[in-house]
Amino acid sequence: MTSNIINFFEVERQIFGICPKCGGFFRLSECKIFLKGEKVKDWLDELGKQQLRIDRQREKIEEKRREIKEEASRRGRKQAQQAMVTIDRIFTPKGLNPDDAKVIFHPIDYVVFNGMNKEPNKISNIVLFDRERKETNAKRLQRSIQKTIESANYEWQTVVIDEEGSIEYK
Image 1 (cartoon, rainbow, N blue to C red):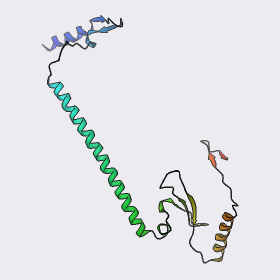
Image 2 (image 1 turned 90 degrees about the vertical axis):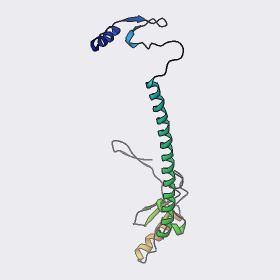
Image 3 (image 1 turned 30 degrees about the vertical axis):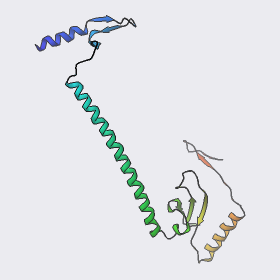
Image 4 (image 1 turned 90 degrees about the horizontal axis):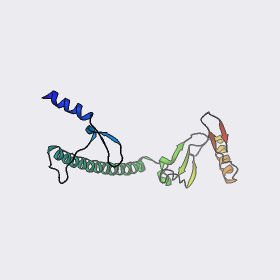
């Protein structure tokens, strides 16, 4: 019995036909044979419908999971910001976002790119933030930085480093 079925499929692969529309050759084993009218449903059709239902439910669950995760992330960010207000005694009282601050320590403590994390690519101003210094040299350096900025005696340069490591100033 098994060898008869195998022989049938081997013979089916050796029977060729010509497509009436395009004129191309095809094997009988490559044909999808169907009858006109409605097909009788079998267990494989039912299995396919059930799989489709499961896939739709899985998509709904995944979408709901994404929504829950985004909401939890929003709540977490809000809680972190509220906690930061109680912890941060430097930036928050001045209305600055601590995430916008970059630590330098010398010649000043921080550079704050105000608005950088609120709206990407939109910095409203740059704040040079330093604690009050008691040493004479440090105070002199602070005044020097302040005078340089007030007199607009500074340059803006863009440095481009290509893949080979060459540096170009623009």
